[in-house]
Structure formats: C-alpha cells, structure tokens
Length: 220
Image 1 (spheres, rainbow, N blue to C red):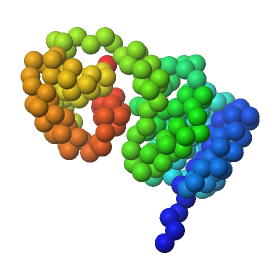
Image 2 (image 1 turned 90 degrees about the horizontal axis):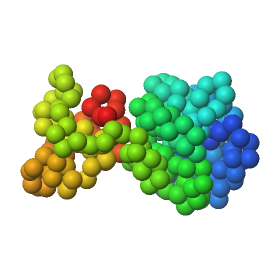
Image 3 (image 1 turned 45 degrees about the vertical axis):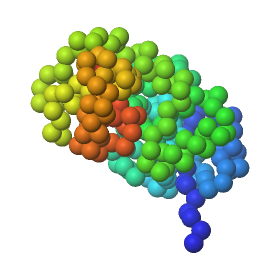
Image 4 (image 1 turned 120 degrees about the vertical axis):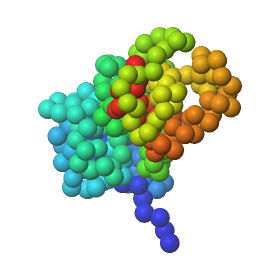
C-alpha cells in the first residue's frame, strides 16, 4: 500500500522564501505542501484547517510571531510538529521556540536535502537540529561549571537528583564523555543515567531532552 505523503504547512512572511520552499518541497518525494501562511495567525489557522504533519515556521513574522504560533500549534494541535526557520536575527527567539515545543531548527540557507531530511525526521517523531543552530544555542547557554548544582526543588517524572543533574548537563551541550569528566564518574555510569532519563521522561533523543529540560526549568 502506498504511504501517505507528509503534509506540510510553510509559514514565512517573505513571499520569495515561502514560494521557494514550497517549490523545493514539491520536488521532494513523499512530501506535499498543503498550505502556506504569511504570518503566525495564518499559520495557526492553516494547521487547524489542514491538520499537517509538519509546519515549517519562520520566527519573525507580523501579527503573531513564530514562537507564539509554535506554542499555539503545539498546544491545540499536538500531532503537528514544528520545524523553525531562522536567520539568527534574534537568538533568544530560538530558545523560546524550543521551549514552545519546536522539534527542528534550520537556517534559511539550508539546502533542499537538509529541509527534506528535517521534514522526514520530525514527521517520524525525531528531532533535527542544524549544526549551526545547535552551536549558536550552546553559545547562548551559561558557561558550564564542573561543580554545577542540581536544580532546586523536586525533579519531574521521578528523576533522581543525579539524573536531573545529568539532564541539566545534556541541556548545556555536554557529551557523555564530558559529563563523565565533570561528575568524576565513568562514561558507562553516565550512559546508564542517560538511559534512565530518556525512559522516565519519554524523550527519544538528546534534542528532545534539551527541550524537556527547558520546559521543566532544568537547563541554564
């Protein structure tokens, strides 16, 4: 049986960008652009009307910006996933979009293959972060200190204090090896903590773990 194409809404206030992405995706196997939007209000309305799998969302748009539109889409239409489009005009908005529930991040100079990859990965429930976006996000985070304290207050979803600390370090961009060095434990021990964090929180990858950490105040 032929698989249903991934349904996409493209939201960008620049017509040339919007139409360029639409044309690009029209040449991508397994993807169908069902609507375009020139601002956040139109994007939210298009999602309600067409129930897309993925929304490609610009951040800086009139009436309703991409962060607020992402928040409303994820709140009211949780089946639809959001991939942010950014030019780094406002780095804090990228962090805000992550907190709002975006699952992917692309720069506007991304190639057709990168856009297609992000659409397919996010539609499949995975996350997709452009390397440049990830690097800029990490630059915005406070510098890591090895003695970083565990966030105060009870941890969500039954996380232990150590698991919450590991999650905080993941959100700071540290690898398992770097976390092991910071906590003076073995890398195998860190892997065990990471597996427990993923199982308890229901995240599937490190990008989702970062988003979870921000939503629950365990990052920064």
